[in-house]
Length: 434
Image 1 (cartoon, rainbow, N blue to C red):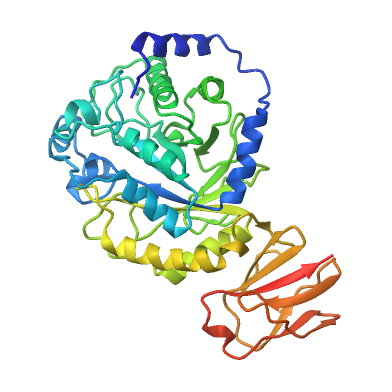
Image 2 (image 1 turned 120 degrees about the horizontal axis):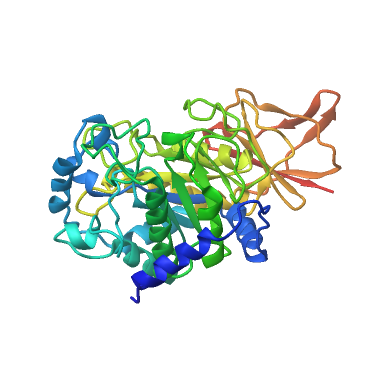
């Protein structure tokens, strides 16, 4: 794989410094087209993986166990994922019905899973494995038609120029000096590498801004650099706030849009951009040996359906083991989810949030003149749909296409459900409108 020379990286970063941030962001035609694809995709795989996996705790272990950077660096020598197979990951995602993968290229510990020329704190220089897993994943994604997003942590517990310190990383043992502008240049340089050396990138998934909310992150300089190199690339920031100028989609962590059950979304007013919600298969994001809080296939299918009903994508996380394998518990569950999407995915993929707002019983989705009503929790054989401002042609059972009898009343549309309808993970009505 041909890599961008260091001098070219620095030139691109310096050129971006001369751009004005006062201009209002105008997304390119390629970017707008990519947004449409993103909204159609609905389902993606999140992959949290790094040298923290060898400790078997989680991706925040350096912070939560107050490990200084010199001690933490030893973990890199144990990271030797000889069982890693990029095609296995990609084919698992594809069989589950996922349309894209978002992978951690650099998490908060600053360790790069790609071949960076700007630091030796990466997989090529600090591990015995010495293989660029991001390159392998990019190649497999292209081969099998899966789009690729790069997660990149703006927060860095390892880099000395990440200074002044934020809310976290204070036990890392770094000197109490640093050049913030130099860190921003370093970050933009690594992003330039990612956007230059790995082919078409569908988007950049930022995290860590919340560590220093009052810092001058120079976001537009970074965002303009990304859009200059790859205009179609979608930018999202996991900052738990309303979208910022230059971003292309809005994300929610462990929450459906408009909710705040996870405690992260109090300031996350929903904007006008495409939406995405991210959740875990157990409790932690990164591999955790003791994390047995596995979500069932039914829970995950319901979350996917609810996300679509909230006009949002669902980014479902796996944290691979240090040997490069995805643990069997996750594979077994994803196989069941894949069986569901292969049969019922038409009611999710390519849709938008339907005319019926999310309810306690479920949600609706819509494609053209077909409304899909997803009944997830209902206790009667008579189902009442809120009144639709459209003429109804028919109401059918999605799976069998059997017509169902219904009456339009002053309280709504009363539908007679067939016997044993409640045995489905998601009972779907297909409503034709005109």
